[in-house]
Amino acid sequence: DAGVIQSPRHEVTEMGQEVTLRCKPISGHDYLFWYRQTMMRGLELLIYFNNNVPIDDSGMPEDRFSAKMPNASFSTLKIQPSEPRDSAVYFCASSLGRLTFGYTFGSGTRLTVV
Amino acid sequence: DAKTTQPNSMESNEEEPVHLPCNHSTISGTDYIHWYRQLPSQGPEYVIHGLTSNVNNRMASLAIAEDRKSSTLILHRATLRDAAVYYCILRDGPNFGNEKLTFGTGTRLTIIP
Image 1 (cartoon, rainbow over the protein chains, first blue to last red):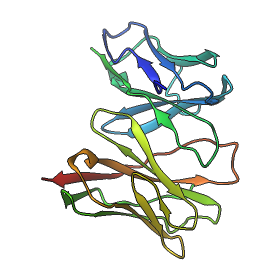
Image 2 (spheres, one colour; image 1 turned 45 degrees about the vertical axis):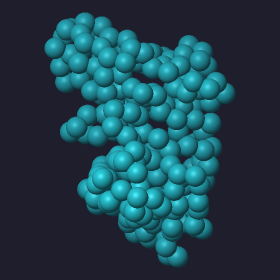
Image 3 (cartoon, rainbow over the protein chains, first blue to last red; image 1 turned 90 degrees about the vertical axis):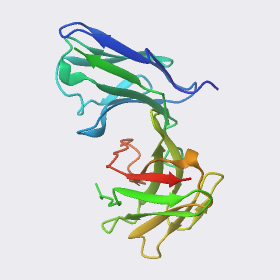
Image 4 (cartoon, chains in turn orange, green; image 1 turned 90 degrees about the horizontal axis):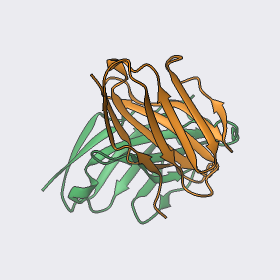
């Protein structure tokens, strides 16, 4: 199993541009999570899906952020327009959604908005 | 949600056991105790979890106090690769509809060669 796959690993973009982060969860996992990590705020949950349906998006910072999961093997997190304060490492994770199982995280996408 | 308290940082010598404490005085009877760690430049990684009894796996052991108000993650023989931030997290058992995993600030473990 290749684990949770995120792309790109690094993204540098100019303020105002659209950014799309991608995630492929582990096959068979029915939950998918998007987290953001910064030095100031630590790891924050942005949104999570169950069976491709968004369940809780209360962590999405503002309308500039949107996430989709068109099928069980793919999810995107989009920022439009991007701002310098969006610079962070964005992690995707997936799980079987049962208490006795852990989450598996991807390696993250480091986003820098200049 | 019940909260956890961990020391900001700890140091340990290589090849010695490490005991990472976590206080969770407001834990409810149905909260599971989970531990994750985050190695440098990587995503968090599941380590171990437990409810009431002590637990062992290939990575670590989890010792849970009898009153469940505290727990200790034990690395039996620390290596340089164990240098990471360790997070202690409570997850509500019956609340299966809520899959949120909320990370605190964790303990930064430094291994001294």
